[in-house]
Amino acid sequence: MVFAEMGKKGEGEGREMGMFFDGIIESMPLFAKELVAGGVAGGLAKTAVAPLERVKILFQTRRAEFHSVGLFGSFKKIANTEGAMGFYRGNGASVARIVPYAALHYMAYEQNRRWIIDGFPDITRGPVLDLVAGSFAGGTAVLFTYPLDLVRTKLAYQVVGPPKINVKGVVNTEQVYSGILDCFSKTYKGSGLRGLYRGVAPSLYGIFPYAGLKFYFYEEMKRHVPDNQKKNIAVNLVCGSVAGLLGQTFTYPLDVVRRQMQVQRLLASNSPELKGTMETLIMITKNQGWKQLFSGLSINYLKVVPSVAIGFTVYDMMKSSLRVPSHDEAAVKVVTNKRNTQTSSLHT
Image 1 (cartoon, rainbow, N blue to C red):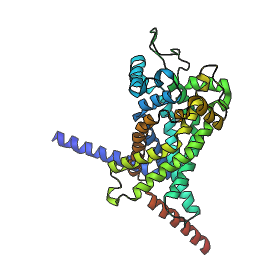
Image 2 (image 1 turned 90 degrees about the horizontal axis):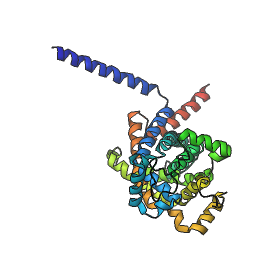
Image 3 (image 1 turned 135 degrees about the vertical axis):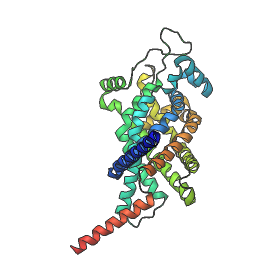
Image 4 (image 1 turned 90 degrees about the vertical axis):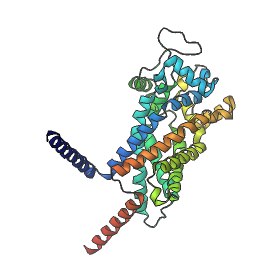
């Protein structure tokens, strides 16, 4: 009898809690739901691939002791010199950046898509729409969050051995930055606001085509998926993987240029000053060879496949949980609202 009453009480509390969360979800504006969905998707996806991201940055920025030992040798060296947490060096800054970045990226994409449909009701709901909306969304997200990306790169570039242990093969065992805030402070004091945006140009050059192509390929592939399979997690993972893979391949050299510009002040004092994007691109090709422009690409493929796949899949799941309308439903709603507004204005 007592257990039955406790069970009924528990069910009642569960229903009340469910109604409470339902109320919160219903009261949230659409853009807020998209921000939450995008932020959660970005944070989970980035953390899942943090070890590969760390090694990729060390490859891109020419850490000689890692560049010479390859992928598995780099994993072994990090494990021996820095322990398990070494794989996540810079990941705090990475997540701090990716949560607002992904939130803005996905939300801006959805908003841009609706604005384009609102402004041009007769436009074809096809891949070109996703390409344009995704490109401008990527640029918006980069401009707002770039300093966090720069800090993440600087922290990941550092290789710090255990205290009082002389580790063979590690060039610099002195930690330049003690954390995210320290890196921000020292970068700003040394170079001002311009220093916090060092390398932003190649980021923008790269993100416009990458973000656009990523959404383009993902939405285009999903259009060919049967309606009864559109919410299948495995299908979304495959579509996201291919979208990230194709989008990244076309823009990877600009990512290498950006990384080298970001850590230029941490390199040896006799290294040439890196100024503009094209100048840096030419210098890398001339001094390091064109292959350096694709250094770490194989690791990036290993990283992009799960990262973009997890990101898109979690985003779609979060949208469903938060009751965000699908693209087709949102497009119909935008057009209907516009027609209703026009009709009411005519009557008045």
